Length: 146
Image 1 (cartoon, rainbow, N blue to C red):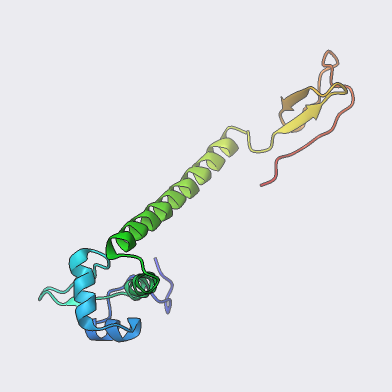
Image 2 (cartoon, helix red, strand yellow; image 1 turned 120 degrees about the vertical axis):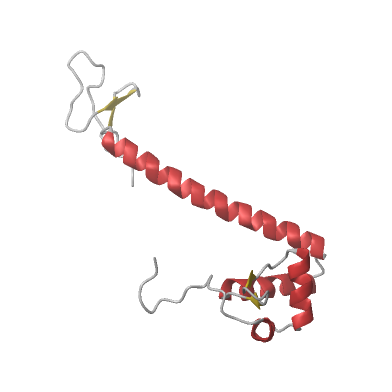
């Protein structure tokens, strides 16, 4: 949910003529990009196109790639891959948070490791020391960074 006064960059607010001006293109070009699926604006009940700030940025990106000589099919593939990367990054963030939550719930978030003279490493719970039977006589404690 957005805070009061914060701009929603995904809100479909620009009619095609304004979006075309903001992107530095002709309205017909926007229609062509919509037809090709490069930039798909939202539609009003009457069928009119409404572009968001994100759509305008995407139009600018399409224009930049086109000026660099990338074909429209190539641009479409680049945009698809960028969307996949963004979705995967969001998923990694979700899974990292879930992992941290579970580790904390299981008491694994603050593990301590003891290292012996000969280099062996033993994972231990926080606040515990190696037993006398352990070969870890010279200790170096380490906590993973968060």
